[in-house]
Image (cartoon, rainbow, N blue to C red; front, side, top):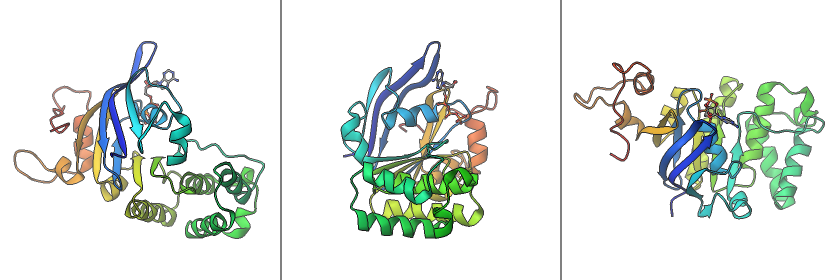
Length: 256
Ligand SMILES: Nc1ncnc2c1ncn2[C@@H]1O[C@H](COP(=O)(O)OP(=O)(O)OP(=O)(O)O)[C@@H](O)[C@H]1O
């Protein structure tokens, strides 16, 4: 079974085709780095794969569950959206305990998992007992990250997970991503921070105008086809997503 499989996944809004016939086949226990310029369709893809938006056409399964079967899908997935939904009037502990309760997680185990994750992310017990309304952006991001992985999902979708984090916390997130895949979890990671993708991704997919225009390992993607010489991921990204036809790279890496 593939962790994520999509067949011609498409989403249209009136005249905009946000996601255009995307085919993905992602192995379990790997990190898939999902790149693309603003408006490329990354969030729309993630919203479809997490059951939050219904595709216009095409199909997809995540951890063996069809994305249209939300009840089956939900226990298998975690999602850290770009703007995470948190209750302002509760503390981090209360927020996370509430989410654990919704997911029927065993109390004692969950408590120690919450403590462990918050400690690793440098969120002190005193911070975790403070109302989320008084948190900085980075503190919110830490709570939202813990919320996304608390139930040990099979597939985690992370949209800009290091956004607003200080360097130490950002490094911890990268370590946690590796630990997730070591335990068999699949991570679908969307970010504009290319060094993060380059460091953690097993495969990189580049979306442009709703289409998957390149897909390969970081090593292959950055290797110049003709000479084997290495380029930076940034150079490859800019070339593939250039609006100037003279600069544009042909999308030969897809299904290649
Ligand atoms: N609810 C909506 N109604 C109409 N158009 C939408 C809607 N959601 C997204 N779009 C359009 O779909 C396209 C893809 O948007 P999406 O948010 O998926 O891009 P993105 O790759 O996540 O961008 P960013 O990197 O800026 O977050 C854009 O043209 C956007 O305007």
